[in-house]
Length: 489
Ligand code: NAP
Image 1: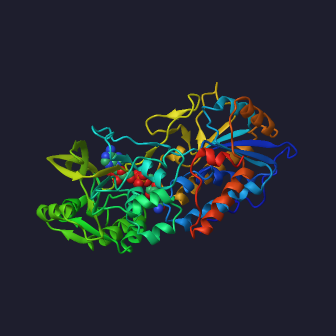
Image 2 (image 1 turned 90 degrees about the horizontal axis):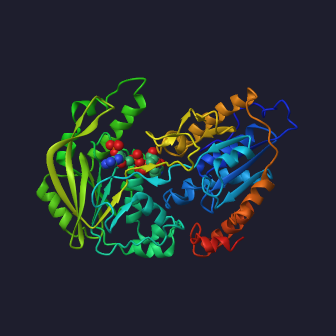
Image 3 (image 1 turned 45 degrees about the vertical axis):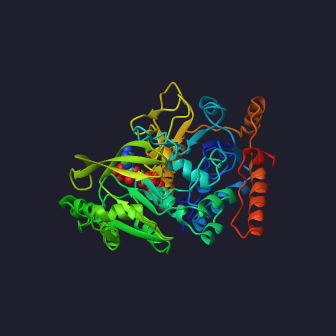
């Protein structure tokens, strides 16, 4: 369970405690809300304004987390207790960098915390990735989570016998699992009825999850894999040559007991490998081909493939041909990469999902940017500023700081590090006092005709969604369209 206690024995009593500080947080996902919560916990006499480009708060919790993980989603309730603080204001539906420039925020606040995550797709850069029936993981995840920009995605599961997912992270597993949920399981989620209707009538026989490196380097976690294998509709399979080629000496080292520095990593690798080895084995190409062509009799085969890189996608009548490059592993243990072999093959499929990770983008040219890593240019959360720009304290939290890696707990830990560094700046008296700029922000948005949702409006939406959900025995029924959400203004 996540703990939200303060690290400070008592709140910071700053030198002029009658003078307030005012902070802006960009993004209302786990990193942004966690930052707000900690700032309120630790520092007295502060105002916090949270800006979010979506109308509804909580970012990835509402639109990214798997909709069958309702228990984990409840972390949102805990994070949103900040709205009880009268000094906390939410501006949902406001895009920083577009509706308000960051140099305007600089004039208004003592410090700005950037926590807007990773909002674009990492491209594959291969021919055919724009074809019909090829989707990015973001499109799919936002579609089944009823994001206003994606709920009407042109997708159907009729005659979609074989689905290939490129990339083997936890998002790939989430998607495969949601695609295979049965009607009872779907009803327990907050997926909307139109999407449920499409999902429950799917005709999927095989989901092929493709990693470019070996079994040991797979990115999904054992916990997620175990959870999925417990669902009786899935049958997990491994291809024998993948297993053999994956277990080179270096990969075996990655599973050995190497002591202190690598203890957790190698133990995790070993356990995941042992678990995967217990899957049914597809002995050869002929058996694989026959599985891919047969009806799977109501179950879904999840075939984990390895050492394959996508090269090109071609349309072939109603289907897609995914051309794959075969790889071998090269490099030292823990740094192995996929090296192409002189061998290619074609996987015929009906839908392809690119689940190769997300990417952050720069929302304003005045924000210092590390374009190699696609993150805000920062050192442990402190943004490296051009001294002529960004006069206010500027900080980064969550995926915009580290890149799109890690579960919710690691996002909290990395935000915590930023807050500690920020508080050192406060202790050193580097942060200026600013009175609550609420009226100025509201006037700015009014002048620019920008409709926004505040916490009071969100409370009404939230109550309505939960009430509608109770009638249908679901956690909630989400309002999808922006115009329906704005009716609560
Ligand atoms: P991820 O874990 O980074 O996985 C991305 C996958 O795409 C990897 O297999 C990667 O292979 C592959 N890949 C990247 N570029 C590629 C390319 N050009 N060609 C082929 N393959 C490529 O990303 P994710 O699944 O989007 O997840 C993001 C983060 O959210 C992760 O830290 C994940 O654990 C977390 N998450 C957690 C949960 C949960 O806890 N339940 C659920 C969802 C997401 P390489 O390894 O070779 O780079």
